[in-house]
Amino acid sequence: MTDDKQHKRADFSLKTRELTAQRAGYRCSFPGCNRTTVGPAEDPQKPLITGIAAHIYGAAISGGGPRGTGGLSYDELKSPQNAIWLCGHCASLIDKNRGKEYPPETLHSYKALHETRIAHEQAGIHTPFGWINKFTLHSSPLFSDDLEIEFAKLNLIVGENSVGKTALCEWIAGISNPAYLERWETLTRDSLKRLSYRVDYYNPDPHRIEVDFLCPKYPRYKLDGEQTFLSTDTIKVIFPVSIEHRFQEMRNDRDIVSDSMKLHPYELQAICDELANKSDFFKGARFEETDEGVYMHVEVQAANQIESRLLRLLASSECEKLMLELGIITATKLSITRPTLLILDADSWRIDTDWLKRYAEVLGSAECRFQTIVSTRLTDMNFDEVTWSGWNVIRLDGTPPDAFILRGHLRSDRPEGTGSGG
Ligand SMILES: [Zn+2]
View 1 (tube, rainbow, N blue to C red):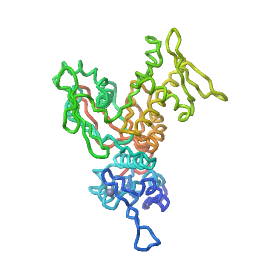
View 2 (cartoon, rainbow, N blue to C red):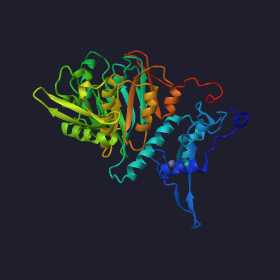
View 3 (cartoon, helix red, strand yellow):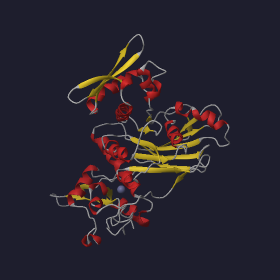
View 4 (cartoon, rainbow, N blue to C red):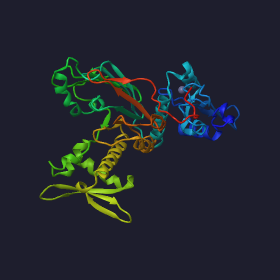
């Protein structure tokens, strides 16, 4: 860093401020506010703009601003990625207490959700845009305390093996389909601590779903305090699991893939037909019924031509990529009509820093109107890079039944001189 920049503020350019406002539809990005920030000025030749492009990480290079610099460079701090569009009232709200109540991850998630909402409305879709706001665990056989997780658009659960990552994914998925909770019938039977949790979501009005495994045989569901008995299905969850291990036991690829995605075979075919439009690598898929079984043929973009390959003969990494792309297409389609969550659990996917950065661009884009939860084992992860690319990191620690969430910001070391976040 040069001396010149040492005392500088990374102010946004006019172009960056305009871009931020336009992407927000000139409306405040703070959840529940949504106030219009553009209108007629007294001068009939001019608009009146009342919104502000606020810094997510602080503008002061010294790190003295609210929320620090997060180790970002001068250019990163003044980039559009570091700006969130807010009304005057909300802009002052987020800077109170040196920004403690609104850390950068939270503001990133507000921005992503708001842009997604604007894209939803711009597409002329009249179903309300919704999202999951919070998961609250009241009691469980794995975690020591009540725990609360605020959800962003992109969420990353990290922790060592058997700390409860898959469990969290299953519980959240259990709000849409009780099949995800089957394992917990046995696992809670011998435990003194029953499984009980709550999921809050906006649609855009606030709602809550409560799940209680109090009764020994099955989970009980409540929507906004009313017993519904059956799962409510107001939130769609797509939780694709890996399929390769099933090729030995089953000769029906259509059933294997449909089961993994919890889709009807008709829905699966519709999703496969979308591959050609959405994927760079896969150009379609079809099923062939023979006397021995049902086989899936995948059209793959090879060097100069499209090759038809049997699903069972794809390399592991290609099979994983296919399931992931089918999952993303499914979530994209479902999110047109209701809040949708895509869950990718560590048991089925190989996820590292590069994967997270690459997929943040896809899953974080306004085109993807659903939320994502990814779980992965704790590896040598660069948390600064992962957080900056938009992931809300939830770090689990401890050993069941006393596992817990590690609080506080996750910062990995950055080279000297780029600022430490004051
Ligand atoms: Zn506001």
